[in-house]
Image (tube, rainbow, N blue to C red; front, side, top):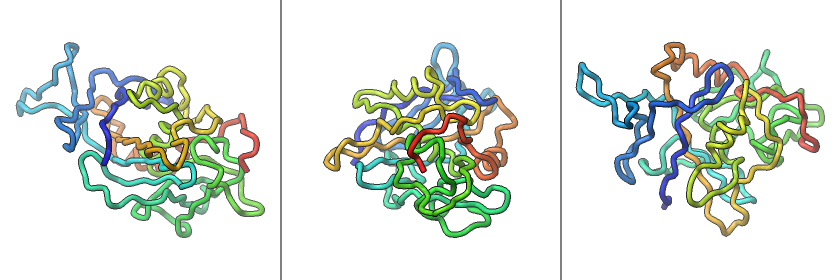
Amino acid sequence: MYSREFPSRVMRYSNGEVSEAAGYYWYRPQEGGAGYLMRVDHNGQCVTDPETGGYVYATEYKTFSVAACNPLLPIMVVDQDPLADATAGWELLRIFHPRDNRLGLSQVVTLESPMGDGGAPVRYVAGKSPSWMPSLLPRTYRSPGRDPPESRGLGGELPIILGLMALTSRKDPNGNESTNQLFLDRNMWRHNEWRNNDAPKGYPDTAQDDPCVFLAKVFLDPQNPAATAESLAWFEWQTPVVRESSAQPSGSR
């Protein structure tokens, strides 16, 4: 059973910058129903299509829910909306290690993800000393190899990465302003660099506390014709969504 939802502001990532996507509103008509990213006018009223008379909303690209269950368990993920779907398919977060020219890149995946050439997904990162550990992934995911390649960043399922980012913000039982501040005010994700080396603050403190779950949805941008499903897939699987930072944290090997 999930408690109520606290939506963040709608955000846009363009040219390496996160900004508020003015003119869009996350709308869920009733608890237990599907939600939509609606276009709204300057008065906050939903915009209608003059040809069809229907509301204008953004096309969804992908959905994932990301859960930190307790300090002793790995991250859990599911490609569903827990408030709209029967979520029976929660999986442990896995890491895929692509080969060839992407050696050292860690891609967050589920067993159904469109992985390319490489071995089976595992529960440890591909490279050594990633700059985004322990902020985005706990140290339990560090590489066990004696001489792993240099880390080349974090890629894979974009909504999962966004959920991991959101889990770094402080817990707030009454809202989601800390997530807004994380992305919009503090600019922690900028030019594909994650600028936070601290351990996440959104995990439950004890095994007795309720899990913390973030629903992350990615939509095609109606105002950016270049934001296609194909371009987003290339961003996820051919590049690091989070590149390595020049400021390396200590003790993350």
